[in-house]
Each structure stands twice: as structure tokens, then as C-alpha cells.
Length: 305
Image (cartoon, rainbow, N blue to C red):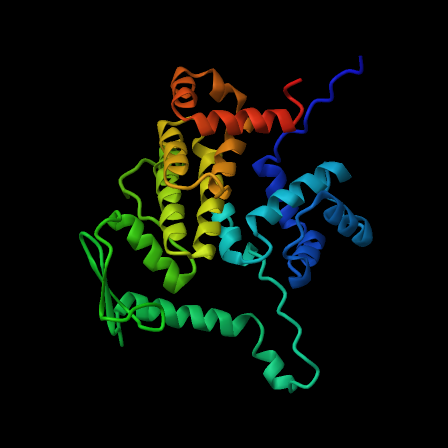
């Protein structure tokens, strides 16, 4: 009998960061025509065509890391990159290459298609988000009213979202204006503990943001919530908050909606010690679909004969 081949481990955070910072990888994968590339074969082709390499990584491993980064869309937008790597400074984030304008467009107009107008638009939206200037519609959560603008949503002047948690609504409104959301944390947390504590607290929030984004068909917010969830899980996978987020992911989405569920499964798969905890065993017994997804994942990875 041939020895069973061990599956390759999930890319680590340090591997992802090293590849993201590689200028050659940035140049290739921030190009708009490569934004949707996900398959092993297609990524391998780009690696070979562009002679990509990263110190310490084999070509096979580089392929796996690049596919993971493509799933997180980090080369597509600096917002997704900041969500995946919150420790990076703005100057370290990659802006995607602008789409090439048709030859008939004047040179001056081509210049307006770059990064600066996008930044100016976001800055303008941020100002009216913070001030409420020129608002002509109100979104009301259980604890707060948001003066917003009819260009985003609205027909009768007021939209009530009292069935949704106020903080989750707040994150959604932030995204509609800023294409990002940032939960506030207790400034009194000790520095040594703040990073893991903040990540743990945010895990459940990201799962709930994903659910509200799915409910209102905001696909970009769904994708961003998954990236933020993965980043937080890297710091706080061994907390009760992660288990609560797993429950939320499986109770607030339908079986065919896979992105957040897949993110949960990947955490379990990369941290096998989790499956040895009594709390996790109880959770797996409670959520039949989670148990099935774990079994299917390990089977597909060759970990079950």
C-alpha cells in the first residue's frame, strides 16, 4: 500500500504577509485582469510566466499562499488588505493598478482614472457620513438614527432596522459610506492584551456583519467581513468568542452560502488542537452541518481514508 500523502498546512499569517509585501507578486496580482484568478493551475501559470519567487517558499507553497491571498482579495483593494493585515501602515498597502482607458480618451482624462479620484471620493463620503450634511433619509436602529442620503437607499424617508443589533447596523452604515468598517474598542484595555481581546470581541461581530450584509445583498460587505473574520481568528482562535462566531455563521446563513462557513472550517482545520476541547466537541454535536462540513473537508484533504 502506498503511504498516505499528508495534506499541505494552511498558509500562515507570516507567509501571507511575506508574499503580500513582495513587489513582483504585487505587480502581477494587483492587475485588474488577474483579480478573479483562483485556481491552482492559473496561479501556477502566472508564477511561471512572471518568474515569481519569495524567499523561504517553494513554488508549490507560493502557489498555495497566493491562492489564499486571492480569496481574501488583498491585491484587489487596500481596504481588504488593511482588514487582513491591520498592522500595516497605509503606505505599505497596495493600490490596484488602474484600469487602462481606451485610446480615444484624452491623456488628461486618463489621469483622472487613477487612485487620487477614488481617494477624494472616499474622503468626501466620509465627511458627509460624519456630519450628516445634505441627508434626506433616516435609517433607524434600536438605539440610533442615521441621517443618510437617498443615492444610497430609501423611498419614504425612514427605514427602520429595529430587528438588527445597533452595533451591526452601525458597521453596515460605515461600509456604505467608507467601504470599510471599524468597531470601537475599550481604550482602557491593557496594551499587552488589547490585540487578542479586540480580535476575540470582533469575531462574533464580523459573523453578524456578514449576516446583515447577506440579508441586504451587500456583497462587498460580505467579502470584507470574511477577510476581517479570518484576520481576527488568527489572533483569537482559542477563545469562546470564536465558538460563538461559529454558531452565528451556521445559524444565520443558508447551507449554500459558503464563504463565512468555509472561513470557520479553515480555522478548525488549521488548529487541530481545537477539536480536542470539550467545548468544541459539544459544539460539533450540536451543529450537524458543522460536523458534516468538517468531515467533508478532512476527506477532501486526504486526512480520512
